[in-house]
Length: 195
Image 1 (cartoon, rainbow, N blue to C red):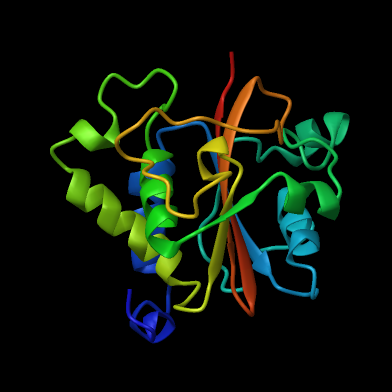
Image 2 (image 1 turned 90 degrees about the vertical axis):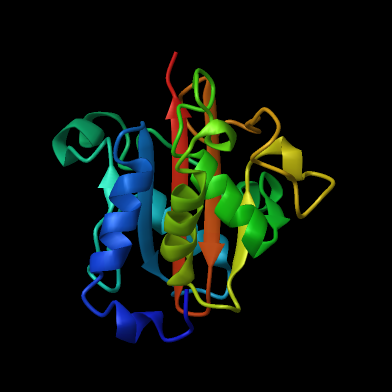
């Protein structure tokens, strides 16, 4: 995505279309929020708790969007009540390229998928959509994941091997997430495989 993505996609049409093609058919959470604190993890928790909205008013995906239902459990449902320290400790930094590969991989039901991204004929299109979504955060963005594949490498290959989760961020047995952090925004992209 070009550095002037906000000008080229001022209304968020490309963002929304790419987000829907990637994640609308899987059990996911994809939301962004403003960067209001020096500690980006506090902003991530605000997004998970839905106490902030997308600063550009762009599309989001939230399978647990029913506020009344969440109020009966937790505002952050299905995310557990976490601390900023846990968010930092339970995620690992990854490169922008690895982040795009991971986001593309979240487009599949990664625990049960018969046709993972690496085997799909539209693999290049899926990766292009992932780059479009992450492009809004700019060239200086940093990325983190909960996947144990990144514990000893900032560039794990999320496309050729089996995906693995990490510490449980949610009430589900298996979850896997990607966090994008820029100077102005944070993005939270999470996939759940409820068993």
